[in-house]
Image 1 (cartoon, rainbow, N blue to C red):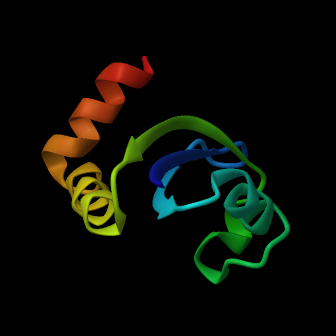
Image 2 (image 1 turned 90 degrees about the vertical axis):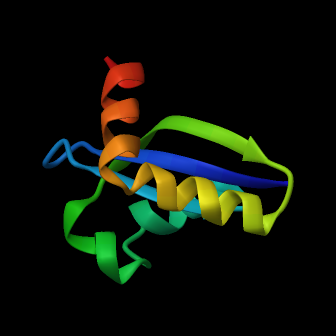
Length: 79
């Protein structure tokens, strides 16, 4: 199984959207500073996860969440 996840930065309250087969491992990598794109924004907490059947489906969902409509959807469900 693949997962799309949304992390919230406790430093700047910004969101980070990604995908992985092991969300807890990815969260640890983000919080340990091993991901260059999020290194300066750590620590993070998981605020949303969604299970997908395969990598392709997870990638499509990740792209949707990064779009304007997807951001509005996340804002709505995370309130």
